[in-house]
Image: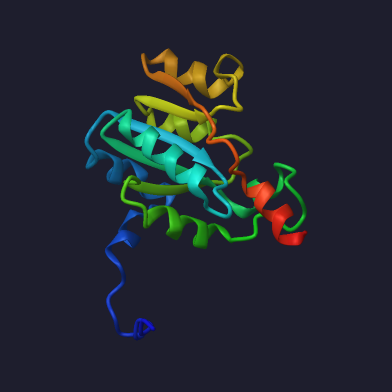
Length: 167
């Protein structure tokens, strides 16, 4: 059985990938381009998330994941007890993934203002989004960026996992 980290043990290096929004301009300046941006709740990480994030990262050189805060996630209507994992825990799990270069948060209902601030080269969304209807997509395309919708990995869903656990 692994020994837990002692309180004096150094923090894992991947925690450096966590980036408060105010620090984004400086941190992004150090990332190679093209920069890929995606966002979501990422509650109950599963195989579909891992494949999606790896595919997103493969479209560019750096991947920034913007995470819905707990309040923002609750407004999405996934249920009163969601997200199951708080925003800090969800961010740490994302940061631990090798394909993710930086993780930040947004509290708004959509990441449109954040996208306008950082101007990514590529916006990636899951297959349930119609890119033609997303204001964020039009925004990224307005400065010559690309938008990509990646298909879902069949059979994987956080909501389905929650139902299965409760069943």
